[in-house]
Image (cartoon, rainbow, N blue to C red; front, side, top):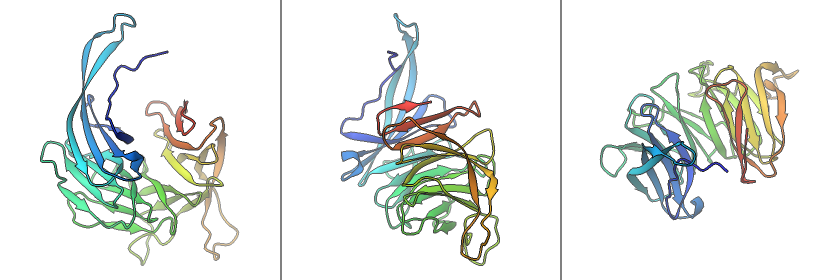
Length: 296
């Protein structure tokens, strides 16, 4: 069995999210909570890695992990993302409905706190195309767009009304396209350029009934535009081509176009908690499940 190069321990705090810095190859941040996020405090850990001498048995380089900073919160932290424009800033998603912006070189308090969501914020994502905005997805069913310099959200989309949003991600190819998934079993794509009398798109560009139960995770393919993967509580992973659009015979009923499922992957014994496409290959996908396995 291959041993990990290093292990980071945070006693009494379970990890919900981890993200590498886009600026420093040896720095990462971890979002965690006490009691698995059911009750209690949260923590943001900033970790720095440094190389040690090679392991005498495997000859693999060992890494030393040091926790540079710990930031405390009064409620759980469920996700985080690094700023794409400021090397020392991190955004966190809070169980109290807050979105917090931290500067890891400053004091123990966030430099900005937004409290517009009415329930837990379960995901945050910084756009890699339009690097001045990020989004948050909440159990209140809405997606909100933010600029770190603005005191209020730029836009709010009631994407999954009366349902929880588990993840919302900007497209890595299109600055104005965002995808979300939720407890209604649906994955939705919104085009923020669509004209509307409302301050948000009046309807999703595409609605996919992705799984028969809750959709816990999604990810964009980094190499192939409009290719998405989703994972749900039905234990399956599905790949969608959003260019292969199926249009309803009548749009007057409020239906929107949907996408075509090109592949279904089975094998997990419990719900699929996370899917992620490789940054380096268009056909490699990793998944993590509550069955305690990671598959590729």
